[in-house]
Amino acid sequence: MSSSQGVVTSAERHHAHHFESGLAEFEACKQAMWIFLVTEVLFFSGMFVLYAVLRVFYPQMMHDAHHLLDWKMGALNTVILICSSLTMALAVSAAQKGEKDNIVKYIWLTFFFSCGFLIVKFFEYSHKIHEGILPGAMWHFEELKAAKAPLFFSVYFVMTGIHGLHVIIGMGVMLWLIKRAKRNEFGPEYFTPVEMTGLYWHFVDLVWIYLFPLLYLVS
Amino acid sequence: MSNHNNNNSHHGKGGHHEHHILSTPMALKVWGALICLTFITVAVAQVDLGALNFTVAMLVATIKASIVCIFFMGLKYDHKENTVIFTTSVIFVAIFMILTFGDLLTRGDVYVKDGKIIPDTFTSGAVVKSKFNKPWVSTPELIAHGKEQFQTQCVTCHGAEGKGNGVAAAGLNPKPRNFTVTDGWKQGRKPSQIFNTLTKGLGGMPSFGSAPSDDRWGLVHYVRTLGAHASETDTPADLQKVGIDPTKEDGGGGGEKVIPVDLAIDQMASGAAEAPAAKPVKGKK
Image (cartoon, rainbow over all chains, first blue to last red; front, side):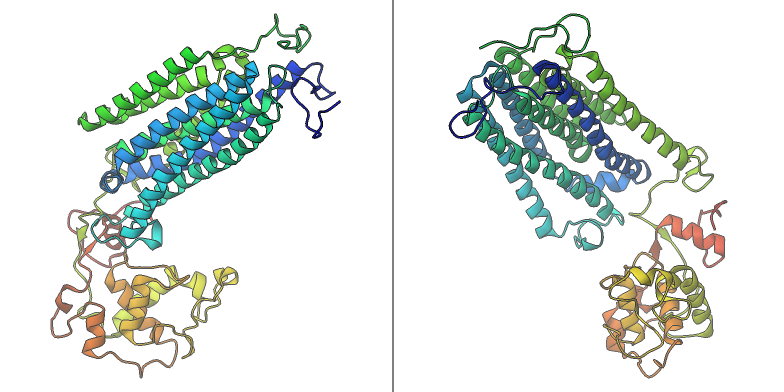
């Protein structure tokens, strides 16, 4: 039933037997993914509420502290992630059409953009660490006198850090998808993993769409 | 290549459901819209619109998020259930925010006074007159003051007798300092050295630098009464290390003169200091 390497191509694959059809299986997976994304929204919301509380009670400090962030790097990262969402969407479309080379190409591009995102973050973080702009008790940046500024940076590092972790996880999943795509595992009959990864990746972009103005821009 | 299982029995929803494939031109249009909206976000942020800046930024972000959900994530072409599921999460975030602020903003006079949030004046602080003259020199009043502070702030970790066996100490490694013995004090037992440890923190010991220096000196002198530490005394050089000039009446400004407003308010309420233009806050301990 399978090809020579023991790999099941999309054409050969049969849906899991407890579903009536491949479509039912796909729809169930998709809904489950959306439910997972709900948990992700709530997960990030804890940090967003923390941000909101700090903003409401220490508006001056938050304003002063956020100037230590470089909005241009934040904007660059926003553009990078939007491009990565585009290439991810194109990868999903390619999978739906069974265009193997395009699937691989677009996922590589998404991966490449993700690397770009992480590189920008690396420069941001290393600059902060160098200046002593660190969360909580590790703060030793003399130039900013706002007494609670470390709080802003606690929020900054935790939110962008956890977001960054999601990016890294997504990148790992992309590599797995590339491997599978090369083995013809995706086509019109079956492209679920690509679609699911797409949903996850767009969610990662969504979080950044809010993080960017809240952390870098709002005064 | 067949398209999909074309039977209508997949889940009983009306009609059959084709996989919608997002075309490349459409994907590019969505990408273009997102990039434009990003430019708009950045451009608007350069202009001072006051409170409107935040609203506009969030509005634009929500439009971008909606576009991503509708087109890239395919909610437009999908069953309404998934939209409902996702929207519900947003509703729950709203509930989270509303309940949190509903609590914080209605806690009597703690955070809100006369309908306004008590302003964040940490950067400027409130000028507070110290109650103690030359607090780096031990006096019975300072020790009593320190003992009060110790009982509210330190007992949890250091224990009621300062043996390092407080309730919270069970989970700490290394254990909090045992003040009744002479060994183990990593930074020394001189008043200035204990003051330094209190101010900056050390390992698991948090920094109490934002507490008024009177409190810290009081604690220093009290803690030293818990064991045989009287022989360890400060030279002028030691005092200078913590910013005190012993030849000056007020220590040369090395002591804290500016403290956060809510601490000043606390002190007012407990009668420990006088702060200008601050009134006692009801509802605080």
